[in-house]
Length: 225
Image (cartoon, rainbow, N blue to C red; front, top):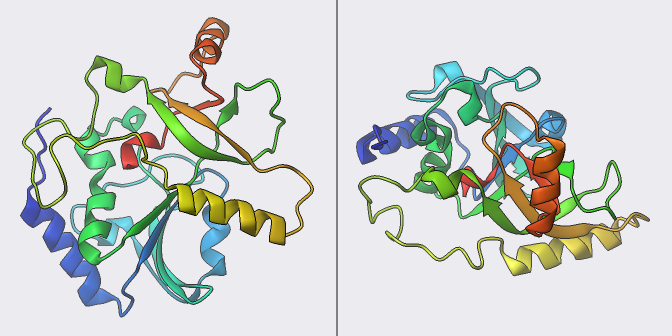
């Protein structure tokens, strides 16, 4: 499906936000299920309901507050999405990915994406945290990709490489921070697979995904990349 947002739409939304907040975020965090309270860690915070923001979709999933929150986390200017969008809510892919391009135009250069997922790796336990090292975009096998349609070079290349989509230095920093926190449980790394949902995986599908080398499965967040 052709992208129905123009560059001007993204720019207008980014300019609206920059005009309505004093914050100039460098980092964007998409808070997944159960992590919405992370915004409470921000200092000097300012929030906007999605309904206030031009062109922004609305969250329909229970537990997703539908707010954009600006502030500082350990001295770093951040913007956090308290609620994300999904294809299973009925949104086309160009709406699901709308916020990330807006953040880019606001000057964000680091994106942290979080979500709840099901473990496929038999060595994983409930409550484990996994850093994504690589992913399998299952919907992409059938042509579902946020980059389909006319390409705008102002957002990036027509054919971007995905072999290093998950920054190695950031993953190493996460491991160092984990050790400094004194956590006893190991911080995992693995391959994540995205399915479209909203139905969960069958037993046979989980078996297949394990054979493909996937360690965890959920209904997001690859599209945000």
